[in-house]
Length: 95
Image (cartoon, rainbow, N blue to C red; front, side, top):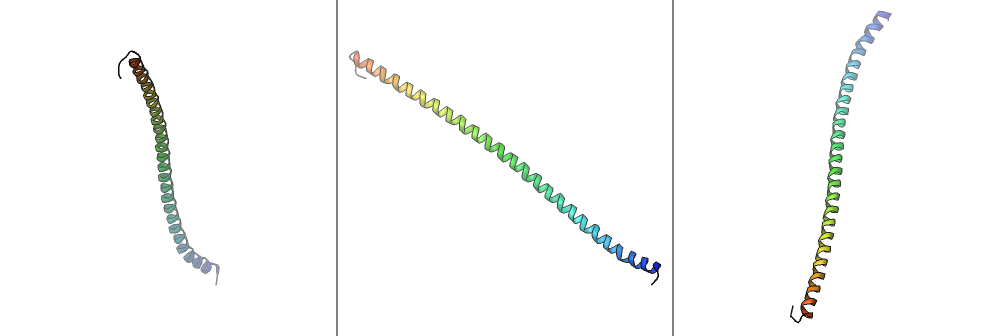
């Protein structure tokens, strides 16, 4: 077998191998792009969930503060009501 024949056989074998490698590389690139898109979507979802959680925590704190203020106002009104009842009783009336 001379050098020309060896080169020709090598070229015939190298062509399909190169084509197979290109197809496999293309599939790998497509898979990597899909995985990248999935990771980006997951990251966006995670960011939105964290933002919603932070907003819910803030809303909860605000609601707790409002409830505490309302309870304090009720306690003050009840104390004022008791004071006025006592005053009415002291003046000879019936509450």
